[in-house]
Length: 298
Image (cartoon, rainbow, N blue to C red; front, side):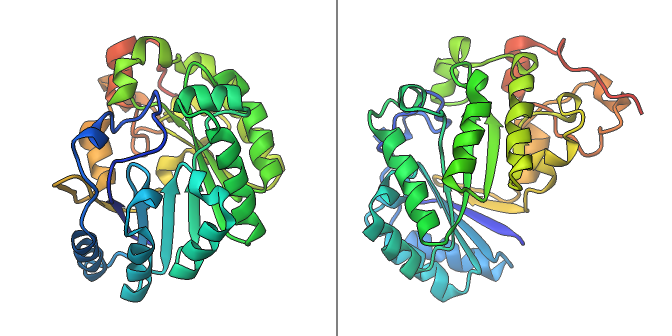
């Protein structure tokens, strides 16, 4: 199903050390309700039937519930909230959001305990709230798919994080390699791990999810690192997505990733996965080079 991603504003009650949006919250106000509704209508007319509200933290938009309701009334079949999950610690807010029309929730957990998660989000208490938010949503029989950003501070604990996610009852989880933009760029020297170092922990975490019957994926980890786990490369199942960002539109996010966001080198042409692999984020190779990447023989 084709998707539209609408960034409704960049304010957030977390201050993540890896946030690709950087400090946009300081100078970009929340979008007007009319602007968002016009974007919804335009996307629907272009055939999009799935919408993701994101930001920043979309739940903090002053018209959040009205925007969700508008998406439902326009006719979107899937209405996903991409969130830090903290507002969903309040069960009444969960109920209001579901009643407005949301039917998928994508909260973010970046550690298996408060020490790691709260360090990365720079928001004391955020782990407790996000975990409670997941519990509340599952209690209300909602589809929950989580995202966890892989950093130098949490990669060794991805198996423990996977166990926590399974215990919380999430339907799906993803491990996404840190994208070195925004705040992550400022912290890149200590925040960014080597892909070769993370992979044993990534695969053990995936194994835990697979054994539990969960849908599990990675993001921004090329096929040459994913031997035996190729069907869990998230880019192969990402829907065609139009993004309404701050004052501009990305017509096709997949094309953006392949053409300018990610990188490949001439040796990639020798790999059996060349046609389906997007490569790593280009900033990673600018930091570490290409020595870790080995084409898979055809």
